[in-house]
Amino acid sequence: MMAGPDCKFSPVGWAKAMKECAILATVVGVLLTLAARAQEPTASLNFLVIRDYNGKPIRNASVVLHQVNEKGKQARGGFELKTNDEGKTSFDGVPYGKLRVQVLAPGFQTFGDDYDVQKPTLEITIKMRRPQAQYSVYQDSNNAPKKEAPAEKDDKPSGNQKPE
Image 1 (cartoon, helix red, strand yellow):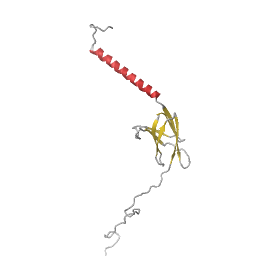
Image 2 (cartoon, rainbow, N blue to C red; image 1 turned 60 degrees about the vertical axis):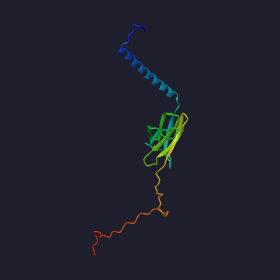
Image 3 (cartoon, rainbow, N blue to C red; image 1 turned 90 degrees about the horizontal axis):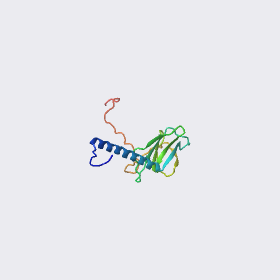
Image 4 (cartoon, one colour; image 1 turned 135 degrees about the vertical axis):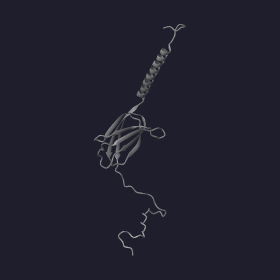
């Protein structure tokens, strides 16, 4: 087809050509993004979650992964994995960089730590602890631990006593 003074484009033909260009640009953009990601190094993470007091595996523990930025803030989203009967779980395709790992299991303290992923394979063993007794560090103005307030004496007779 020759472009010249006799060449006429209809509005329908012009819209169709623009639509085809937009689709082509979108496909090229997606392919370039996938190619860039293919070049970005990724790692395979293997987790083992065990009890700290006897080394036995903890099954069905939640392992939560969040990417962490340069300022130490975790990104939105993330991944949640569950351990198997042997206390193991794994995740492939983790981009290199800082990663925050949190582990939750009923009957154990929540674990959390940041890891710097810089190798193709990373083995992480997490030793979960039992909860510890809680205590208060609150003190009254005399630097003595706060005592419970004594119950106030009621001047009214209770139902068991007869008035005098």
